[in-house]
Length: 620
Image 1 (spheres, rainbow, N blue to C red):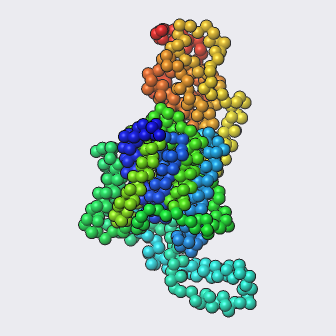
Image 2 (cartoon, one colour):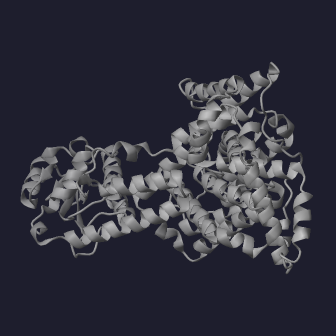
């Protein structure tokens, strides 16, 4: 217990700061998901607390994130559509999917799958993250200009014939399900159809209109119509929010700019009594468990979303473990990936019971926590308590926040979540495959396929297709280049025959690393351990690359990260026998000459040894 409170002051300050940073994002993700701001807040409260308590990354702050919210939107919209557009009816089934996703994460952690997350290729992750940014950015255009399709009477009227047809189909299905002979009771069917109220048809029409205008393609379809009905007050609020989010960062980064934008723009709108659209009302009091998840559970309704739940679990695992790596680098610690998955799964499971959105480890909130002094799991628990206090203290006030303000915050999130590093690399990556007369990079092809399919079709299937293509292309490349198995693990190095005469006096100053086999997405994690393997006495690192015939984009960036770390430690890095393909890749993103000058690249070990003798002095 004493150890638990050993860093109480730092953890308290870190947790409170992270909780404040999480507030506007939790509200925005909740509104964006379709379940309302309270769902985002509940998710942030429960996931932050239980993922911190049970997880394997002490400094991690968890809650709803952009990728998890984007996939959740698909689940929510699909289930609501099958329940006549009624969120209340659909909610138990939606939360059942979220609960299942959390349980899958717990199972993955128990079975030890945390160590396998590293096998997701970089282009797939890059394409997916950029697609998340595109989805959030495009889908927030309509609320930021104050256009809501189901409130456009003329637009909704287009769906009335389809609504009447759908309602009739539902009547026929109900009668067939009850064992009624439809033809013999056709008069009864006609009577039921005649008893339909106009309100029923209008409600179904609004549901169809909202569904038709959802997603990237739906938004683009209805955008010309929306631009003719711009609400200038709403767009002014959204643009003001965006301006403050980016502008305030130039003044200071100690106070979260999204929170400043939320308070300032909402305060002005409320203070001047502008006729703006508010977010949904946040319920007063403590969150209550939704026990209908268990009492009204229907396997048939949830079955179509089992694969989606598994994808949510995997996405949350990737999102969390990537953030764990960031936390490790900042705190010089090592997270437990399987324990982290169990913690995230428990957090998501409990959040679903209380009506919260699923989430994962959040990079920005975790970085804020660490920079503010957070060092133990207590910081994540305090962040949760902070959000709960905000919910209880200012819930009614938060319900007055303009919807356009949250849309503006989400637009900045969408812009920020895109993988610009991967996008900038597109022109410089080698064109290593040919489709008809067109030559292009296989890495770029995978990224673009995942990006386009995720944005316009289905996030889940897009990732699956990207993984399959990446695996096939990788197998082809490896088959073409080498039959050797990869060996880049940070094991104790055994001297090669030409290293026998290496000067004994320089053995403590010079560390020699051998890389045997390709450096690809499956071996990058082991390679990144190189920096930890180097003795503290070493000032020069010799990397022998004669048996590394190939590196992919994941390997390229892993190499860059290691070299940057070594440069920060003022170490000289020497390359020996660098082969054509890896050299070409490293020249494309300026590893050569920015990190490895050309005079530090040697064709053979003898010439490298001569440089060492001339430039490295015995310090011991």
